[in-house]
Image (cartoon, rainbow, N blue to C red; front, side, top):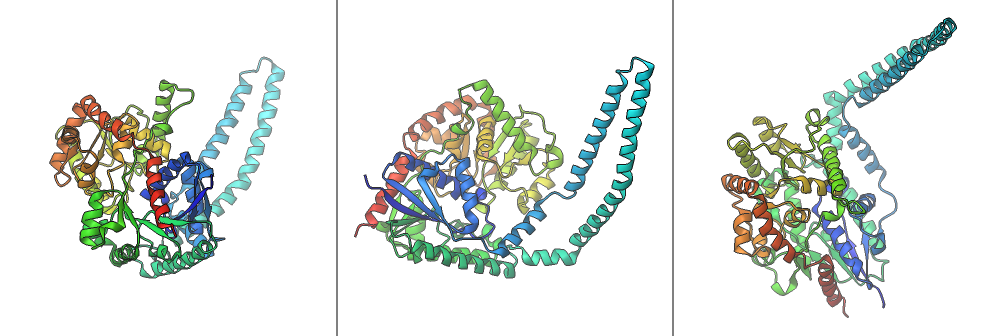
Length: 532
């Protein structure tokens, strides 16, 4: 049977964290769905700086390397390597080298005096006393000599480091670093990174031009109009266009927002064939807002996104699997943003609510925080709230600080897939308050696949998939009302088994659709558009 080759176009800009991008898990599920197809194979073309991150992502998601190949331009730009080193240095914890050195000195000291004490308790005669005194004296002399040499060296090294730290903290140095680091408010640095990105896209285009065996190309997002420079049949996915629906929240990005919206618009208007995850996005966004012809747009719903395969122990041992999940959860908690509180966290029976999401304006995190504050202070629930978004988000950080929630709301950022699965499984309730999504939020199937019930915002794309009125009544709340959100969470905590029973029936029905079905439907479109 001849193998059909299709291309996947990925073009994230420099220093993008693929762990933060929803595309990563979607792409992993998509490729895993192709595992059952003997006649389909994918070639991924991406920037040089994305290859390692993609390989790590696919490995963590257990995607077979036989399903795809990754092609990139040779060699990342040298300037980018410098920026990455600078960025990493800013992320490292201050004074970490001093902490490590202190720990080592304490360890050596403890070993020395333990050795002395062990020798002392073995003395049974006068000759033993002289032997002990001689050996201990030699050891003390050696330690003293090392100390005489090491202390001045350490003093000089500490002085140099301290001087450098003062320099690095100075306003002049920080101003230089800020000028170099890309950010929404730094037009000069963003211009440089845009130029770097543009040059990389040209190098990718040169590679694509040589891949004659690829019949058609697929782009899973709408941010890269350069995709349309490919001289082969093309299919582009439009998951959502939320900057146009939530302009106030996204407007904090200033000119970058306009650039993103312009790029998305260009991608949409230049597209000959489009696919999206829901009928709502097709008709309300692409047809009504952008004025596209409906026959150009196909709707392909997601399949369930399961997490249960990532926390199983083989051979099956439920008790050991539970211990493994608790260990993963504790590891994630101890790396949370509130390091002072969480570094020695020991309670593996902690009760909590869980929301796995980035912090974008459409994710509605502040409504969830307001609901949680009410439940914590007025309804006296004992649960913490675990969020996977970055705790540096200004609005979220301000709310948590103002209401003294630093030890109640924990930001478990940068979770591995296994840690994410464990956090879902051990939660009493998963929550998704998002105003809008491209398709039915993954939260529903991710949580239920590991036995955790869910409450979610009532939005069109969710109602499109969860159609049963009884299911909607116990699951959905008004995303514009923190009171309704709080009431639904409280009810879910008090009626957990009842909620789980209703939702498991829906989950069983949804599970009949597989990611192989999703891939087959995409391949059918790619086949059609690639016909001469």
